[in-house]
Image (cartoon, rainbow over the protein chains, first blue to last red):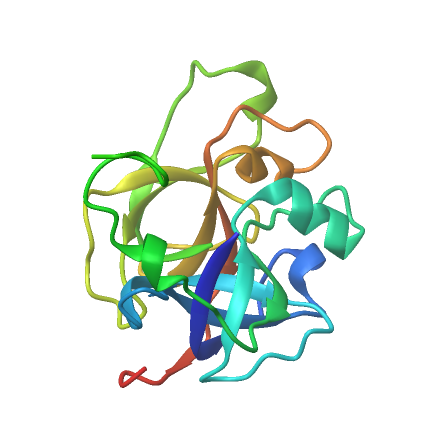
Length: 106
Length: 91
């Protein structure tokens, strides 16, 4: 799962029938440690989550879960929004480990 | 799903049998402002798009799913023709 920020929406009249009743949002990858977005936005579908532009969302970038949510085995969908993020908590102690895993002496 | 622009066609007489009746289109991946990004790819088409159209495509396993029950071995498939994009550049 990926944390992303909704930066826009797009619409298309001619599209695969499985995509027809759904909203198409543009989601940009969001890095919680730097609080910055980067890259080219990815298109994700929104079914009953109702995310809007500016919202931080949780997105799945895979086909299996997408088909599960859409309840359509023939949906050619990769990228679906599964939740709106309220808050992210980062444990500062473990954020910038210089060397080795947590608990090592070095 | 990612945006792109159809820039041409690829024709194969000899192809894997389940591709019968499918068209191969040459797609230039773009960003949402239609600026080119990277190298063109070949994609199958599930919506009837043509040259010059701004489209979105799906990659990997789902590309085959887009083409229905026979599921030809495609790794990129066009799933829609984009009419418009509304994007906030500041976010």
